[in-house]
Image (cartoon, rainbow, N blue to C red):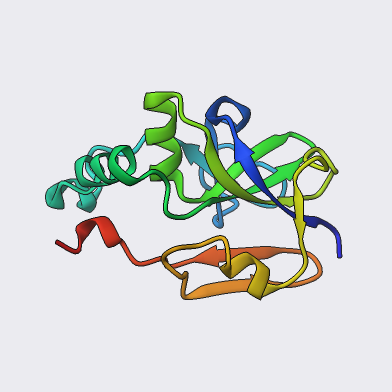
Length: 149
């Protein structure tokens, strides 16, 4: 495999201000991906449901239920999934649990994970998608438990 899967608590300042997105033609190119800012777009549909306010209240009340997912590349460490949690962690200077596809052994002091089951054990709310291939990894589609009231 071209990377190792790591897990640990990360300071929000240790993650880039850029988020990796699948579209390589969007934003500034980072490796094979495009990018956008960590700060949410105020026109995003979630704002209509008080998404960020409810997420922030949930995190401050119960902590982080689920880790973010990052790629650690030569250019730095970039969030791929969980950017709303990262944004809130930054607002409150909170360490946040992270699963990292570590392509350059930057995070070799973190716990190494070897299977989908070990990854799933780090989540309270199970993601629908965990894909692990030799070249790339994907985590996606956790339920938004903070919206279920």
